Image (cartoon, rainbow, N blue to C red):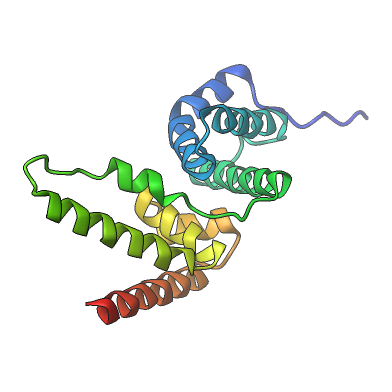
Amino acid sequence: MQQQEPAMLTDLSCDALYQHYAAGIFAYFYKQTASRDDAEDLLLDVFLAAMERNNLESLKEAEQKAWLWSVARNKAADYYRRKTRHPGVKLKQVEETLYVDEAQEPEQITLRREEYADLRATVAQLTELQRDVLQLRFAYGFSCAEIANVLEKKEGAVRMILSRTLKFLRTIYNRRR
């Protein structure tokens, strides 16, 4: 009796996954790399891996999402290893996307920029795992359970990392006030 090969992702299924998740994963890569070309290449790598993954269609939607984001995180880590750069979240892009009231006085704008610089310096002190948890939680709106799936950690561990990281950031912020 011959065994059947596990079903690979069909073009239709891959297209549906791409339509649903590509924008978020691309934004993640773009923030990580600050390069549109690199972000597009990494996105392509994620969906090539999805097409080659056996039985991805048989997973529940939440499991598919977790798997795709795990692959994305691993591809970003591979990118940094290849580039021999220190991995981290590029908060410069976050600062540039924040709403700035054009009616503000130059002094207020300067103070805000100093606060952003302090925030970047503080976040730079965090571990890669802490930055990833913060980014997935607040930039992408993932639940702790979803973050746990992506990072292959227990949900309780993710909650603890998030809690301790926020406490650390609050402590630093309050010291500077």
